[in-house]
Length: 351
Image (cartoon, rainbow, N blue to C red; front, side):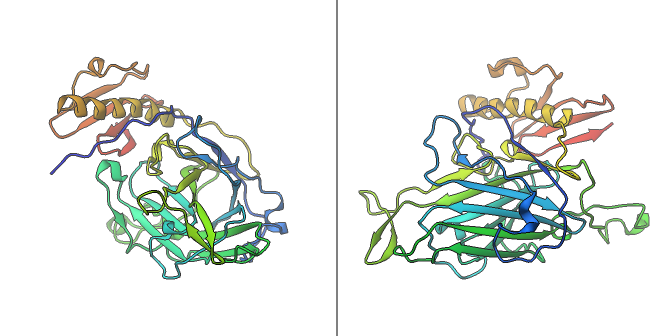
């Protein structure tokens, strides 16, 4: 078995933050964001190229907005531009072969067992779970379902008609917390049943998830009244554009350490990124350096000074073996440890 390799992104960690307000009423799904439900909900910043600063700005603007209540996370997005087309109608197909809108959720901020939902302009869904990022040897589980998820698409124009007055397409998504968040609670289940009957809850005020959005946009030409993917000299489609809320510094959205922070608030109150999350990011620089070291030398190193990068001031230590490593530093409370493994899993362990 070949060990996975995590290439080093070209940009430092600088995750955006969204302070998610509570919804002011029920949502009637129709794909439109020009209604009272969304009126007071702020947009994210416009999406940028996935590779980060220094790369071409997206040809068309994209923004998203979110709110929540005790049962659902609500997501809306507007994808501006005249090239509105779709071909895929079969659910759980590889939707990014069309232009699409993608949602990535990591409720535990562990970098493992995160969820993805993709939609095209036909409102065809592909939902899947990732055991961990592909760079870390992870696998996608397409058989997993985001149970109860609802979505709608509105098109200002006509799908697959280049002659129409195409302006934008927009999406609304309603995700049940019960489908993506599981906790075990001694208060609600007796100890002997804790792992048999998981309790599923909405987040509490002040809690956070890691989150990202992506818009896949293919370059197209119009031929015989239809959109056709633009091809290169080899006759194959040119690479797609990837426009995201939180750039990852690589053409790889599956870098959950680069995703943004979604804070669950009452009215959009600002909240700081927790210190332990910042320590995870400090350890993550060493994680990339360890993978680069193994690529150069054939093994990981137990000597952090050999990595050739500045060491964080969080008191990091490492245990390294032939097939992996574990990075560690004290947690902010000093009552536990922040841990990051070579397969990308990270958590805070109380001692």
